[in-house]
Length: 320
Image 1 (spheres, rainbow, N blue to C red):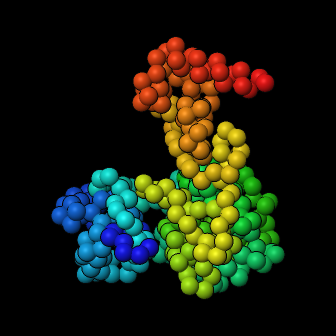
Image 2: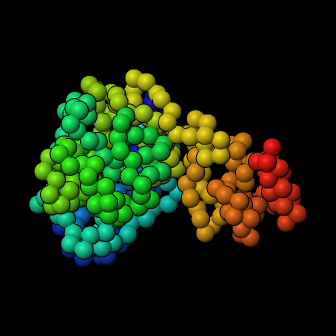
């Protein structure tokens, strides 16, 4: 991106932090002073953050972090941007910086899968005795993924261990490669895989965000776009070719545009064109369209009779 004004930072580090609540309050004040916006989680096990700001603001933040011996080894993934990727600044203390739902947690500094740099990961993906397992949520996979990667049927990272146990035969006798957005989830997940008895487990070091910027592999073997948890929603990865893998929730046509279901009790992420968003009232089902607090109806000032007219029209269309 030429003449960009802002950067978006993505980073994490498993490192001991005493009194995460106090640290979170101090860190929030420092971030606000720098006029950054973003989301940062801290816990006794470390820090996990993504934030945006001007080039000068983000450089000042990175320097501040590097000067703290606890965070001197942080590797920042930097995306160029034309403005902020977040609306506000949040720093929150949590029990874990990434939640895998384990009774006995994993410390990645003690147990984790083998790190593979992008070039090695690219080569290993093409081995016939290797399984590539996406460690992200299903809606992230649906927007983009490595070619041939397995899609776990999960909506939350904490459900991944149970899914693996239910599908264990799929991985027997195979080498396992796993990947996620920036690497933090795989640090813990690959360690859990090893503890479960899977012997040959490797992870993409730095995640998809690093892979897409590697000057040699140039994001090859990635199809679609990468889902990100900020206002950009989707960012490109493959520098050589772009293949759309996302499918419109309503028609199945190629689509890379995510919206949230207008039923506040559902809020499911669905891929939808602008045309279908309006046609189907940004709702994933009839039940959600008929919900009394449907946000689409509220935003567009639709009366009860107008909503019913739309529902009747959709039913007539579906019966044709």
